[in-house]
Image 1 (cartoon, helix red, strand yellow):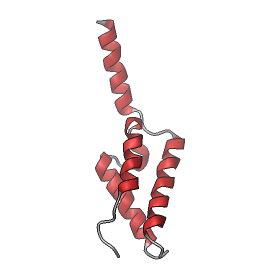
Image 2 (cartoon, one colour):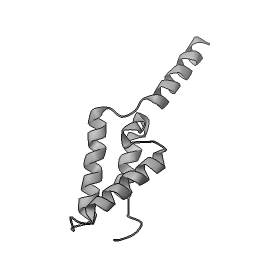
Image 3 (tube, one colour):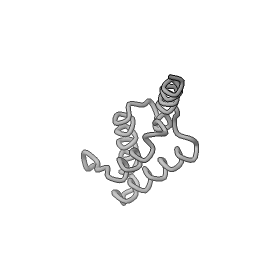
Image 4 (cartoon, one colour):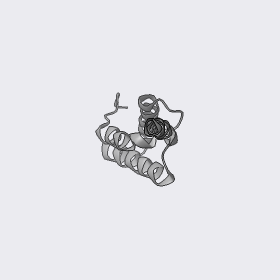
Length: 89
């Protein structure tokens, strides 16, 4: 019974731990790489940054990319790498 209780506690903790600062930086770098890969025009890039960060927040149901759960870190990176903008400006 004690193992089951500890397991449930660990599961709750895993669901609540958000990205460490290094992981947050990795998300920022992945977003920047994706935007620069998609768009050469510096005037269009800010809109793409906004769109991608908005979609990350929607996809992971967070107020900020910093609030992504640590257990979703790799999933978030894959999402960013496969992201395609909705509309070309």
